Image 1 (cartoon, helix red, strand yellow):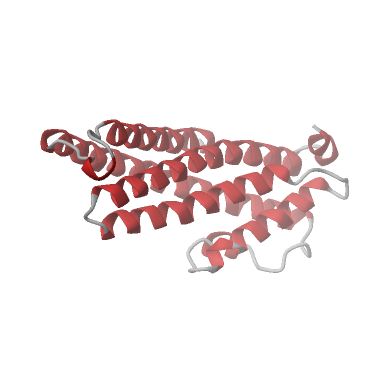
Image 2 (cartoon, one colour):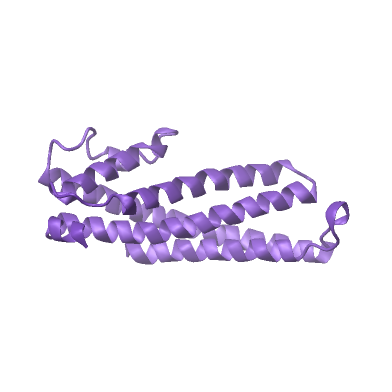
Length: 200
């Protein structure tokens, strides 16, 4: 179920990328004379609204399923190594909802769970780091792009915000793929032979 919701979230991001390309390709003219015909803009505006609504739905569903999995993983790792965590298992849920804290606490919990999964063996941390870096990058850049798009009334800055939003969507696709790999690997490490899983 987790991989299915992550796939759906990635599909929503790909639709967002597509709508961004449609907006950029609708521009006519050049430089200070660039414009988007009114009929095309109405079509794009409706498309943006539909894509954003669908994307929001997939993100909410994915977030619920992922946080449930994250909490179960924290409980499992806590059973294997009760002293390995600095916060209780409730923070595997609550840490996502505290402003600013959400930018580092879930990563620390995931890092501690990953360390438990390695079971003393040396193993790579790049699946965890790739997931978190791409996730936080897409989150921050996406919010900045949305705020910039809402503040401007000029076409040039608006298209710049659309481009930033497309980069954020691309990062989110990377984050979804990295999350699938990270989740599968960590689940295997905690439920199976940790040393074998870490060496793959």
